[in-house]
Length: 118
Image (tube, rainbow, N blue to C red; front, side):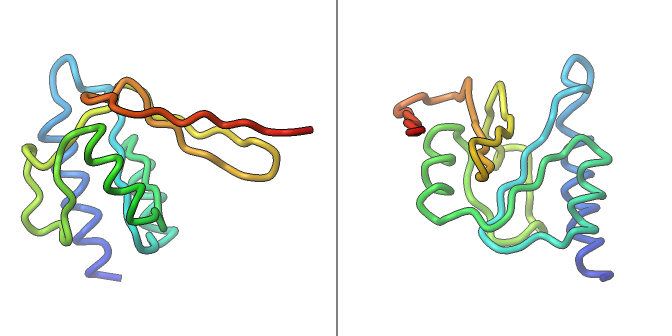
């Protein structure tokens, strides 16, 4: 658990360094292609950080294109310049599936239209 705690602490430190002044109440989003420990998710949530786990590689690429920033393989070298920006991120349940919407992005080059039948 020590290694997980270190990584979570590093993410929290970065958020606290970046979200200051008029940005103090900003949320923070971490998207991971692998799993995120439930305890780590809880720690992140306490600092207004939403952790999304098991993201598909293609969705990661799309997020990077839309929001800016760069994908990172480790938290050791995380810097503010690696971050992208989205003005609104929210989760919505449609039927039995949960979807995360990322809106008001830096480079809105595409959109998704969800069509649901009865």
